[in-house]
Amino acid sequence: MSVKLTITDQMAQIAREHGKILAPLRDDLVLLDSGLDSLGFAVLVARLEDRLGVDPFTASEDAQFPVTLGDFVKVYENGAR
Amino acid sequence: MARADALSLRQSMGKSSSERFFWDRTAHARIGDLAGGTSCGDRLEKLSGKSVLVATGSQLATALALIELDGLARRLTILPPDAETEHFDAVIAGAQVDAIVTDRESKASGSFDRLVRVVCSPGIEQAERLPPALLQTEWVMLTSGTTGVPKMVVYSLAGLTAPMRAGKQADSPVVWGTFYDIRRYGGLQIFLRTVLGGASLVLSRAGESISDHLDRLGQHGVTHLSGTPSHWRRALMSPEIRKISPRYVRLSGEIADQAILDSLRHAFPQASVGHAYASTEAGVAFEVLDGLAGFPDQFIERSRDGVEMKVLNGSLRIRSPRTASRYIGAERTALADKDGFVDTGDMVELQGERYVFAGRRGGIINIGGLKVHPEEIEAVINRHPQVRMSLVRPKRSPITGSIVIADVVLKSGNRVGGELLAVEGDILRLCRDALPRHKVPASICFVPALDVAATGKLARRHG
Image (cartoon, rainbow over all chains, first blue to last red; front, side, top):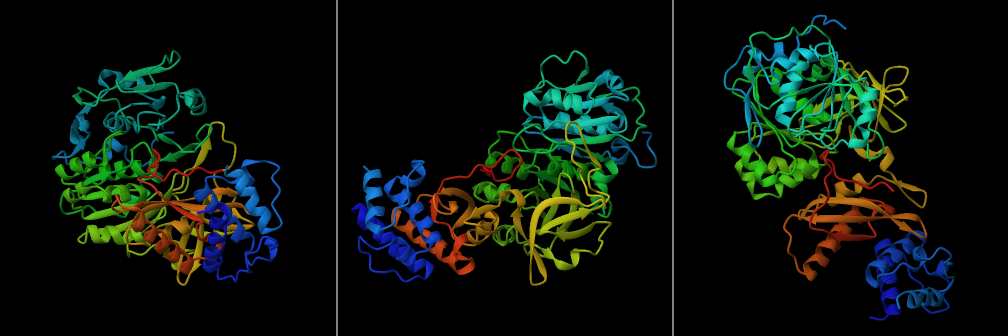
Protein backbone atom coordinates (compact mmCIF):
# COMPACT_ATOMS: atom_id res chain seq x y z
CA MET A 1 0.00 0.00 0.00
CA SER A 2 1.38 3.43 -0.88
CA VAL A 3 2.19 5.90 1.86
CA LYS A 4 -0.66 8.11 0.74
CA LEU A 5 -3.16 5.29 0.70
CA THR A 6 -2.04 4.15 4.16
CA ILE A 7 -2.60 7.66 5.46
CA THR A 8 -6.03 8.21 3.91
CA ASP A 9 -7.08 4.72 4.92
CA GLN A 10 -6.16 5.41 8.55
CA MET A 11 -7.83 8.82 8.48
CA ALA A 12 -11.07 7.21 7.34
CA GLN A 13 -10.72 4.51 9.99
CA ILE A 14 -10.08 7.00 12.82
CA ALA A 15 -12.95 9.24 11.68
CA ARG A 16 -15.24 6.19 11.90
CA GLU A 17 -13.95 5.25 15.34
CA HIS A 18 -14.30 8.82 16.62
CA GLY A 19 -17.70 9.37 15.04
CA LYS A 20 -16.43 12.21 12.83
CA ILE A 21 -17.32 13.04 9.25
CA LEU A 22 -14.29 13.28 7.03
CA ALA A 23 -14.04 15.94 4.31
CA PRO A 24 -13.11 14.72 0.82
CA LEU A 25 -9.41 13.87 1.03
CA ARG A 26 -7.87 16.12 -1.63
CA ASP A 27 -4.22 17.22 -1.53
CA ASP A 28 -5.15 20.85 -0.83
CA LEU A 29 -7.44 19.94 2.04
CA VAL A 30 -6.49 22.00 5.10
CA LEU A 31 -5.96 19.46 7.89
CA LEU A 32 -7.81 21.61 10.42
CA ASP A 33 -10.87 21.33 8.16
CA SER A 34 -10.53 17.58 7.58
CA GLY A 35 -12.97 16.61 10.32
CA LEU A 36 -10.31 15.08 12.60
CA ASP A 37 -9.47 17.00 15.75
CA SER A 38 -6.09 17.10 17.47
CA LEU A 39 -6.76 13.81 19.28
CA GLY A 40 -7.61 12.25 15.93
CA PHE A 41 -4.29 13.43 14.50
CA ALA A 42 -2.42 12.24 17.57
CA VAL A 43 -3.90 8.77 17.03
CA LEU A 44 -3.14 9.00 13.32
CA VAL A 45 0.53 9.80 13.90
CA ALA A 46 0.83 6.95 16.44
CA ARG A 47 -0.81 4.44 14.08
CA LEU A 48 1.27 5.58 11.13
CA GLU A 49 4.39 4.97 13.19
CA ASP A 50 3.25 1.37 13.67
CA ARG A 51 2.55 0.93 9.97
CA LEU A 52 5.26 3.02 8.31
CA GLY A 53 7.90 2.70 11.02
CA VAL A 54 8.45 6.42 11.38
CA ASP A 55 7.13 9.41 13.30
CA PRO A 56 8.67 12.29 11.35
CA PHE A 57 7.40 14.89 13.82
CA THR A 58 8.91 13.41 16.95
CA ALA A 59 12.07 12.24 15.15
CA SER A 60 13.05 15.76 14.15
CA GLU A 61 13.05 18.65 16.59
CA ASP A 62 12.10 21.31 14.11
CA ALA A 63 9.57 19.49 11.97
CA GLN A 64 6.67 21.84 11.35
CA PHE A 65 3.27 20.28 11.41
CA PRO A 66 2.00 20.58 7.82
CA VAL A 67 -1.05 22.60 6.86
CA THR A 68 -2.54 20.60 4.01
CA LEU A 69 -3.03 16.88 3.47
CA GLY A 70 -0.64 17.00 0.50
CA ASP A 71 2.12 18.43 2.73
CA PHE A 72 1.34 15.87 5.42
CA VAL A 73 1.73 13.00 2.95
CA LYS A 74 4.99 14.51 1.67
CA VAL A 75 6.48 14.61 5.17
CA TYR A 76 5.81 10.86 5.47
CA GLU A 77 7.02 10.09 1.96
CA ASN A 78 10.28 11.82 2.78
CA GLY A 79 10.49 10.32 6.24
CA ALA A 80 9.63 6.78 5.20
CA ARG A 81 12.40 6.54 2.62
CA MET B 1 11.93 1.84 74.89
CA ALA B 2 10.99 -0.82 77.43
CA ARG B 3 8.25 -3.19 76.43
CA ALA B 4 4.96 -2.10 77.96
CA ASP B 5 2.30 -4.76 77.71
CA ALA B 6 2.52 -6.53 74.38
CA LEU B 7 4.40 -9.78 74.00
CA SER B 8 7.42 -10.15 71.78
CA LEU B 9 7.05 -12.19 68.61
CA ARG B 10 8.84 -15.15 70.17
CA GLN B 11 6.44 -15.06 73.09
CA SER B 12 3.46 -14.63 70.77
CA MET B 13 4.25 -17.73 68.74
CA GLY B 14 2.09 -19.61 71.14
CA LYS B 15 2.83 -22.85 72.93
CA SER B 16 1.59 -24.91 70.02
CA SER B 17 4.94 -26.33 69.06
CA SER B 18 3.10 -28.82 66.90
CA GLU B 19 3.90 -29.38 63.26
CA ARG B 20 4.36 -25.80 62.11
CA PHE B 21 7.02 -24.93 59.60
CA PHE B 22 8.61 -22.31 57.45
CA TRP B 23 9.34 -24.00 54.14
CA ASP B 24 11.95 -22.60 51.80
CA ARG B 25 12.69 -24.18 48.42
CA THR B 26 15.61 -26.17 49.80
CA ALA B 27 15.26 -26.06 53.57
CA HIS B 28 12.71 -25.80 56.32
CA ALA B 29 12.53 -24.91 60.01
CA ARG B 30 10.11 -26.05 62.71
CA ILE B 31 8.71 -22.82 64.09
CA GLY B 32 8.17 -24.24 67.58
CA ASP B 33 11.88 -25.00 67.92
CA LEU B 34 12.48 -21.27 68.35
CA ALA B 35 10.78 -21.43 71.76
CA GLY B 36 14.04 -22.82 73.14
CA GLY B 37 16.46 -22.36 70.28
CA THR B 38 18.20 -19.91 68.02
CA SER B 39 19.47 -19.57 64.50
CA CYS B 40 22.27 -17.28 65.62
CA GLY B 41 23.96 -19.54 68.17
CA ASP B 42 25.49 -17.88 71.23
CA ARG B 43 26.08 -14.74 69.12
CA LEU B 44 22.46 -13.72 69.58
CA GLU B 45 23.25 -11.94 72.84
CA LYS B 46 25.61 -9.56 71.03
CA LEU B 47 22.55 -8.04 69.32
CA SER B 48 20.84 -7.13 72.56
CA GLY B 49 19.84 -3.46 72.58
CA LYS B 50 21.33 -2.83 69.15
CA SER B 51 19.91 -1.23 66.01
CA VAL B 52 20.15 -4.27 63.75
CA LEU B 53 20.12 -4.41 59.97
CA VAL B 54 18.67 -7.75 58.86
CA ALA B 55 20.55 -8.33 55.63
CA THR B 56 20.07 -12.06 55.22
CA GLY B 57 19.89 -13.52 51.73
CA SER B 58 17.49 -16.37 52.44
CA GLN B 59 13.94 -15.61 53.49
CA LEU B 60 14.04 -18.55 55.88
CA ALA B 61 16.97 -16.98 57.75
CA THR B 62 15.09 -13.66 57.71
CA ALA B 63 11.97 -15.24 59.19
CA LEU B 64 13.89 -16.81 62.07
CA ALA B 65 15.97 -13.68 62.73
CA LEU B 66 12.88 -11.45 62.91
CA ILE B 67 11.24 -13.67 65.53
CA GLU B 68 14.42 -13.82 67.56
CA LEU B 69 15.26 -10.13 67.38
CA ASP B 70 11.87 -8.63 68.21
CA GLY B 71 12.11 -7.50 71.81
CA LEU B 72 15.87 -8.04 71.84
CA ALA B 73 17.03 -5.41 69.36
CA ARG B 74 16.32 -1.74 69.87
CA ARG B 75 15.51 -1.37 66.20
CA LEU B 76 15.11 -3.87 63.35
CA THR B 77 15.69 -2.66 59.82
CA ILE B 78 14.68 -5.13 57.15
CA LEU B 79 16.71 -4.94 53.95
CA PRO B 80 14.59 -5.82 50.93
CA PRO B 81 16.02 -8.40 48.53
CA ASP B 82 16.62 -5.96 45.69
CA ALA B 83 18.22 -3.22 47.80
CA GLU B 84 21.02 -1.55 45.89
CA THR B 85 24.43 -2.00 47.53
CA GLU B 86 25.14 1.67 46.82
CA HIS B 87 22.35 2.56 49.25
CA PHE B 88 23.68 0.47 52.15
CA ASP B 89 25.64 3.36 53.67
CA ALA B 90 22.58 5.63 53.61
CA VAL B 91 20.44 2.91 55.22
CA ILE B 92 23.05 2.24 57.91
CA ALA B 93 23.41 5.95 58.68
CA GLY B 94 19.67 6.64 58.50
CA ALA B 95 18.68 3.86 60.91
CA GLN B 96 21.78 4.39 63.08
CA VAL B 97 22.59 0.74 62.54
CA ASP B 98 25.22 -0.67 64.85
CA ALA B 99 24.84 -4.38 64.13
CA ILE B 100 24.15 -6.49 61.08
CA VAL B 101 22.74 -9.99 60.67
CA THR B 102 23.80 -11.83 57.55
CA ASP B 103 23.87 -15.37 56.25
CA ARG B 104 25.82 -17.21 53.58
CA GLU B 105 23.52 -15.91 50.84
CA SER B 106 23.65 -12.31 51.96
CA LYS B 107 24.43 -9.62 49.41
CA ALA B 108 25.83 -7.48 52.21
CA SER B 109 29.13 -9.34 52.22
CA GLY B 110 31.38 -6.27 52.24
CA SER B 111 33.25 -5.19 55.31
CA PHE B 112 31.14 -3.43 57.87
CA ASP B 113 34.00 -2.79 60.23
CA ARG B 114 32.19 -0.54 62.62
CA LEU B 115 29.24 -2.92 63.02
CA VAL B 116 28.71 -5.92 65.24
CA ARG B 117 28.21 -8.73 62.76
CA VAL B 118 26.31 -11.93 63.41
CA VAL B 119 26.05 -14.66 60.83
CA CYS B 120 22.93 -16.75 61.25
CA SER B 121 21.81 -19.95 59.58
CA PRO B 122 18.46 -21.11 58.31
CA GLY B 123 18.53 -23.87 60.99
CA ILE B 124 17.66 -23.75 64.70
CA GLU B 125 19.97 -25.05 67.44
CA GLN B 126 18.72 -25.58 70.96
CA ALA B 127 20.10 -23.05 73.42
CA GLU B 128 20.58 -23.42 77.15
CA ARG B 129 19.37 -19.91 77.74
CA LEU B 130 18.09 -17.19 75.52
CA PRO B 131 18.72 -13.49 76.14
CA PRO B 132 15.60 -11.78 77.51
CA ALA B 133 13.43 -9.85 75.06
CA LEU B 134 12.38 -6.81 77.05
CA LEU B 135 12.40 -3.99 74.52
CA GLN B 136 9.69 -2.39 72.43
CA THR B 137 11.54 -2.91 69.17
CA GLU B 138 11.08 -0.42 66.36
CA TRP B 139 10.55 -2.09 63.00
CA VAL B 140 11.86 -0.31 59.93
CA MET B 141 10.95 -1.19 56.36
CA LEU B 142 12.24 0.32 53.17
CA THR B 143 9.76 1.58 50.60
CA SER B 144 10.05 0.43 47.03
CA GLY B 145 10.79 3.75 45.39
CA THR B 146 11.85 3.40 41.79
CA THR B 147 14.77 5.80 42.01
CA GLY B 148 17.08 7.16 44.65
CA VAL B 149 17.54 6.06 48.23
CA PRO B 150 14.46 4.23 49.47
CA LYS B 151 12.47 5.90 52.22
CA MET B 152 12.74 4.25 55.62
CA VAL B 153 9.47 3.81 57.46
CA VAL B 154 9.13 3.09 61.20
CA TYR B 155 6.43 0.91 62.81
CA SER B 156 5.69 -0.71 66.10
CA LEU B 157 4.93 -4.43 66.17
CA ALA B 158 1.53 -3.52 67.61
CA GLY B 159 0.80 -1.35 64.55
CA LEU B 160 2.02 -4.00 62.12
CA THR B 161 -0.07 -6.70 63.71
CA ALA B 162 -3.19 -4.66 64.48
CA PRO B 163 -5.03 -5.97 61.38
CA MET B 164 -4.69 -9.52 62.75
CA ARG B 165 -5.99 -9.02 66.25
CA ALA B 166 -9.60 -9.30 65.23
CA GLY B 167 -9.01 -12.55 63.36
CA LYS B 168 -9.87 -15.73 65.17
CA GLN B 169 -7.78 -18.86 65.03
CA ALA B 170 -8.89 -21.26 62.34
CA ASP B 171 -10.22 -24.68 63.35
CA SER B 172 -8.13 -26.61 60.87
CA PRO B 173 -4.41 -26.08 60.22
CA VAL B 174 -3.57 -23.05 58.15
CA VAL B 175 -0.76 -23.13 55.62
CA TRP B 176 0.00 -19.68 54.30
CA GLY B 177 1.74 -19.01 51.06
CA THR B 178 2.66 -15.74 49.45
CA PHE B 179 4.08 -14.68 46.13
CA TYR B 180 5.60 -11.71 47.96
CA ASP B 181 8.99 -11.66 49.59
CA ILE B 182 8.49 -11.37 53.37
CA ARG B 183 10.90 -8.42 53.43
CA ARG B 184 8.22 -6.30 51.73
CA TYR B 185 5.18 -4.91 53.50
CA GLY B 186 2.73 -7.28 51.78
CA GLY B 187 4.87 -10.32 52.56
CA LEU B 188 5.70 -9.23 56.11
CA GLN B 189 1.96 -9.11 56.82
CA ILE B 190 1.67 -12.76 55.82
CA PHE B 191 4.75 -13.71 57.84
CA LEU B 192 3.26 -12.05 60.94
CA ARG B 193 -0.11 -13.69 60.33
CA THR B 194 1.67 -17.02 60.20
CA VAL B 195 3.55 -16.49 63.45
CA LEU B 196 0.63 -15.08 65.43
CA GLY B 197 -2.05 -17.26 63.89
CA GLY B 198 -0.52 -20.63 64.63
CA ALA B 199 0.10 -21.37 60.97
CA SER B 200 2.87 -22.58 58.66
CA LEU B 201 4.28 -20.61 55.73
CA VAL B 202 5.62 -21.58 52.32
CA LEU B 203 8.21 -18.94 51.46
CA SER B 204 8.75 -17.65 47.94
CA ARG B 205 12.16 -17.79 46.32
CA ALA B 206 13.67 -15.21 43.99
CA GLY B 207 14.26 -16.66 40.55
CA GLU B 208 12.00 -19.66 41.08
CA SER B 209 9.59 -20.26 38.21
CA ILE B 210 5.92 -19.74 38.93
CA SER B 211 5.30 -23.41 38.03
CA ASP B 212 7.86 -24.66 40.55
CA HIS B 213 6.48 -22.31 43.18
CA LEU B 214 2.90 -23.50 42.61
CA ASP B 215 4.15 -27.08 42.72
CA ARG B 216 5.72 -26.46 46.14
CA LEU B 217 2.62 -24.67 47.38
CA GLY B 218 0.58 -27.69 46.30
CA GLN B 219 2.92 -30.17 48.00
CA HIS B 220 2.62 -28.34 51.31
CA GLY B 221 -1.15 -28.10 50.98
CA VAL B 222 -1.40 -24.31 50.98
CA THR B 223 -4.74 -23.13 52.39
CA HIS B 224 -4.25 -19.33 52.35
CA LEU B 225 -2.42 -17.64 49.49
CA SER B 226 -1.59 -13.98 48.92
CA GLY B 227 -0.09 -11.89 46.14
CA THR B 228 -0.59 -8.89 43.92
CA PRO B 229 -3.07 -9.02 41.03
CA SER B 230 -0.01 -9.25 38.73
CA HIS B 231 1.28 -12.25 40.70
CA TRP B 232 -2.12 -13.89 40.39
CA ARG B 233 -2.47 -13.19 36.67
CA ARG B 234 0.86 -14.90 36.11
CA ALA B 235 -0.12 -17.83 38.33
CA LEU B 236 -3.36 -18.28 36.39
CA MET B 237 -1.30 -18.63 33.21
CA SER B 238 0.49 -21.68 34.63
CA PRO B 239 -1.01 -25.17 34.22
CA GLU B 240 0.34 -25.92 37.74
CA ILE B 241 -2.41 -23.71 39.16
CA ARG B 242 -4.41 -26.98 39.28
CA LYS B 243 -2.07 -28.23 42.01
CA ILE B 244 -3.41 -25.83 44.61
CA SER B 245 -6.87 -25.44 46.10
CA PRO B 246 -6.67 -22.68 48.71
CA ARG B 247 -9.61 -21.84 51.00
CA TYR B 248 -8.63 -18.20 51.04
CA VAL B 249 -7.20 -16.13 48.23
CA ARG B 250 -5.90 -12.63 48.99
CA LEU B 251 -4.93 -9.81 46.67
CA SER B 252 -3.14 -6.63 47.66
CA GLY B 253 -0.57 -4.12 46.45
CA GLU B 254 -2.28 -3.17 43.19
CA ILE B 255 -5.81 -2.45 42.03
CA ALA B 256 -7.85 -5.66 41.97
CA ASP B 257 -10.07 -5.18 38.93
CA GLN B 258 -13.29 -7.11 38.35
CA ALA B 259 -11.64 -9.34 35.74
CA ILE B 260 -9.02 -10.76 38.11
CA LEU B 261 -11.57 -11.20 40.92
CA ASP B 262 -13.85 -13.11 38.53
CA SER B 263 -10.96 -15.22 37.21
CA LEU B 264 -9.98 -16.23 40.74
CA ARG B 265 -13.54 -17.06 41.73
CA HIS B 266 -13.78 -19.22 38.62
CA ALA B 267 -10.42 -20.93 39.31
CA PHE B 268 -11.18 -21.53 43.02
CA PRO B 269 -14.96 -21.75 43.36
CA GLN B 270 -14.66 -23.03 46.95
CA ALA B 271 -12.36 -20.23 48.12
CA SER B 272 -13.11 -16.92 49.71
CA VAL B 273 -11.47 -14.22 47.58
CA GLY B 274 -10.54 -10.99 49.35
CA HIS B 275 -8.74 -7.91 48.20
CA ALA B 276 -6.98 -5.90 50.86
CA TYR B 277 -5.97 -2.29 50.69
CA ALA B 278 -2.64 -1.51 52.27
CA SER B 279 0.38 0.61 51.64
CA THR B 280 3.80 0.64 53.24
CA GLU B 281 3.14 3.99 54.87
CA ALA B 282 -0.58 3.71 55.64
CA GLY B 283 -0.61 0.07 56.71
CA VAL B 284 -3.54 -2.28 56.11
CA ALA B 285 -6.73 -0.24 55.87
CA PHE B 286 -9.43 -2.72 54.92
CA GLU B 287 -10.31 -5.91 53.15
CA VAL B 288 -13.19 -6.44 50.73
CA LEU B 289 -14.74 -9.88 50.58
CA ASP B 290 -17.86 -9.42 48.43
CA GLY B 291 -16.09 -10.31 45.19
CA LEU B 292 -16.55 -6.86 43.70
CA ALA B 293 -13.85 -4.39 42.71
CA GLY B 294 -13.53 -1.21 44.74
CA PHE B 295 -15.07 -0.76 48.19
CA PRO B 296 -18.45 0.33 49.63
CA ASP B 297 -18.81 4.05 50.21
CA GLN B 298 -19.72 3.49 53.88
CA PHE B 299 -16.03 2.69 54.47
CA ILE B 300 -15.34 6.40 54.09
CA GLU B 301 -15.65 8.56 57.17
CA ARG B 302 -16.99 5.78 59.29
CA SER B 303 -14.31 4.37 61.54
CA ARG B 304 -13.89 0.60 61.16
CA ASP B 305 -11.54 -1.22 63.56
CA GLY B 306 -9.98 2.16 64.35
CA VAL B 307 -9.26 2.92 60.69
CA GLU B 308 -10.61 6.24 59.44
CA MET B 309 -10.60 7.13 55.76
CA LYS B 310 -11.45 10.22 53.78
CA VAL B 311 -11.10 11.38 50.20
CA LEU B 312 -9.43 14.74 49.66
CA ASN B 313 -8.61 16.14 46.21
CA GLY B 314 -9.45 12.73 44.80
CA SER B 315 -6.94 10.71 46.82
CA LEU B 316 -7.58 8.30 49.64
CA ARG B 317 -6.33 9.44 53.08
CA ILE B 318 -6.02 7.09 56.03
CA ARG B 319 -5.61 7.59 59.75
CA SER B 320 -5.23 4.48 61.87
CA PRO B 321 -3.11 2.91 64.57
CA ARG B 322 -1.73 0.65 61.83
CA THR B 323 -0.01 3.41 59.90
CA ALA B 324 3.73 3.79 60.18
CA SER B 325 4.80 6.26 62.83
CA ARG B 326 7.40 8.28 60.89
CA TYR B 327 10.23 8.34 58.39
CA ILE B 328 13.83 8.15 59.49
CA GLY B 329 17.02 8.84 57.55
CA ALA B 330 17.34 11.44 54.83
CA GLU B 331 13.58 11.71 54.22
CA ARG B 332 12.47 15.01 55.69
CA THR B 333 8.82 15.06 54.66
CA ALA B 334 6.11 14.30 57.17
CA LEU B 335 4.50 10.90 56.81
CA ALA B 336 1.07 12.18 57.80
CA ASP B 337 -0.66 15.56 57.76
CA LYS B 338 -1.22 17.56 60.94
CA ASP B 339 -4.40 15.59 61.67
CA GLY B 340 -2.57 12.29 61.34
CA PHE B 341 -3.93 11.29 57.93
CA VAL B 342 -1.54 9.61 55.47
CA ASP B 343 -2.08 10.62 51.84
CA THR B 344 -1.87 7.30 49.98
CA GLY B 345 -1.50 8.86 46.53
CA ASP B 346 -4.14 6.40 45.33
CA MET B 347 -6.91 8.17 43.45
CA VAL B 348 -10.50 6.98 43.94
CA GLU B 349 -13.76 7.78 42.22
CA LEU B 350 -17.28 7.33 43.53
CA GLN B 351 -19.41 5.22 41.17
CA GLY B 352 -22.87 4.73 42.60
CA GLU B 353 -22.40 3.43 46.12
CA ARG B 354 -18.90 2.21 45.57
CA TYR B 355 -15.49 3.78 45.42
CA VAL B 356 -13.26 2.41 42.69
CA PHE B 357 -9.53 2.92 42.40
CA ALA B 358 -8.58 5.06 39.44
CA GLY B 359 -4.80 4.78 39.72
CA ARG B 360 -1.73 6.44 41.20
CA ARG B 361 -1.53 10.19 41.34
CA GLY B 362 2.01 10.06 39.98
CA GLY B 363 1.07 7.74 37.12
CA ILE B 364 -1.33 10.12 35.40
CA ILE B 365 -0.87 10.50 31.65
CA ASN B 366 -1.69 13.91 30.22
CA ILE B 367 -3.30 13.79 26.78
CA GLY B 368 -3.63 17.31 25.46
CA GLY B 369 -4.63 18.53 28.91
CA LEU B 370 -6.95 15.62 29.69
CA LYS B 371 -5.81 13.38 32.52
CA VAL B 372 -5.83 9.60 32.25
CA HIS B 373 -5.03 6.88 34.74
CA PRO B 374 -3.53 3.90 32.88
CA GLU B 375 -5.17 1.56 35.41
CA GLU B 376 -8.73 2.48 34.44
CA ILE B 377 -8.03 1.63 30.80
CA GLU B 378 -6.33 -1.61 31.80
CA ALA B 379 -9.40 -2.57 33.82
CA VAL B 380 -11.53 -2.25 30.68
CA ILE B 381 -9.09 -4.16 28.47
CA ASN B 382 -8.78 -6.92 31.09
CA ARG B 383 -12.52 -7.52 30.82
CA HIS B 384 -12.01 -9.05 27.37
CA PRO B 385 -12.30 -12.82 27.85
CA GLN B 386 -9.08 -13.55 25.98
CA VAL B 387 -6.93 -11.00 27.81
CA ARG B 388 -4.77 -12.16 30.72
CA MET B 389 -3.13 -8.84 31.56
CA SER B 390 -2.39 -5.46 30.08
CA LEU B 391 -0.23 -2.41 30.57
CA VAL B 392 -1.27 1.00 29.33
CA ARG B 393 1.62 3.39 28.77
CA PRO B 394 2.11 6.86 27.40
CA LYS B 395 3.67 7.41 24.02
CA ARG B 396 5.04 10.80 23.10
CA SER B 397 2.85 12.62 20.65
CA PRO B 398 3.82 15.72 18.66
CA ILE B 399 0.22 16.88 18.82
CA THR B 400 -1.22 16.12 22.24
CA GLY B 401 2.01 15.67 24.22
CA SER B 402 1.12 12.06 25.00
CA ILE B 403 -1.19 9.39 23.75
CA VAL B 404 -1.96 6.01 25.26
CA ILE B 405 -0.76 2.67 23.91
CA ALA B 406 -1.68 -0.73 25.38
CA ASP B 407 0.57 -3.77 25.69
CA VAL B 408 -1.63 -6.84 25.98
CA VAL B 409 -0.89 -10.43 27.03
CA LEU B 410 -3.47 -12.94 25.79
CA LYS B 411 -4.56 -15.99 27.80
CA SER B 412 -3.33 -18.39 25.14
CA GLY B 413 -0.52 -17.22 22.90
CA ASN B 414 0.26 -18.49 19.39
CA ARG B 415 -2.37 -16.78 17.32
CA VAL B 416 -2.08 -16.00 13.65
CA GLY B 417 -2.33 -12.46 12.27
CA GLY B 418 -6.00 -12.57 11.30
CA GLU B 419 -7.12 -13.71 14.76
CA LEU B 420 -4.99 -11.04 16.41
CA LEU B 421 -6.56 -8.36 14.25
CA ALA B 422 -10.00 -9.56 15.29
CA VAL B 423 -9.06 -9.50 19.00
CA GLU B 424 -7.51 -6.06 18.58
CA GLY B 425 -10.73 -4.80 16.98
CA ASP B 426 -12.74 -6.33 19.83
CA ILE B 427 -10.59 -4.74 22.51
CA LEU B 428 -10.76 -1.31 20.88
CA ARG B 429 -14.53 -1.61 20.54
CA LEU B 430 -14.77 -2.54 24.23
CA CYS B 431 -12.70 0.55 25.10
CA ARG B 432 -14.72 2.83 22.83
CA ASP B 433 -17.95 1.64 24.43
CA ALA B 434 -16.71 2.14 27.99
CA LEU B 435 -14.33 5.08 27.84
CA PRO B 436 -14.18 8.64 26.52
CA ARG B 437 -12.32 8.98 23.24
CA HIS B 438 -9.00 10.20 24.64
CA LYS B 439 -8.72 7.14 26.84
CA VAL B 440 -9.03 4.66 23.98
CA PRO B 441 -5.54 3.34 23.14
CA ALA B 442 -4.17 4.56 19.82
CA SER B 443 -2.83 1.09 19.25
CA ILE B 444 -2.61 -2.33 20.85
CA CYS B 445 0.66 -4.26 20.95
CA PHE B 446 0.37 -7.97 21.67
CA VAL B 447 3.29 -9.06 23.82
CA PRO B 448 4.21 -12.51 25.23
CA ALA B 449 4.69 -11.22 28.80
CA LEU B 450 4.82 -8.08 30.90
CA ASP B 451 7.53 -7.20 33.41
CA VAL B 452 6.54 -7.64 37.02
CA ALA B 453 8.90 -5.82 39.41
CA ALA B 454 10.44 -7.39 42.51
CA THR B 455 7.60 -5.78 44.46
CA GLY B 456 5.10 -7.97 42.60
CA LYS B 457 3.63 -4.96 40.85
CA LEU B 458 3.46 -4.39 37.14
CA ALA B 459 6.61 -2.51 36.15
CA ARG B 460 5.54 0.93 34.98
CA ARG B 461 8.00 3.30 33.44
CA HIS B 462 6.95 6.78 34.40
CA GLY B 463 8.20 9.22 31.87
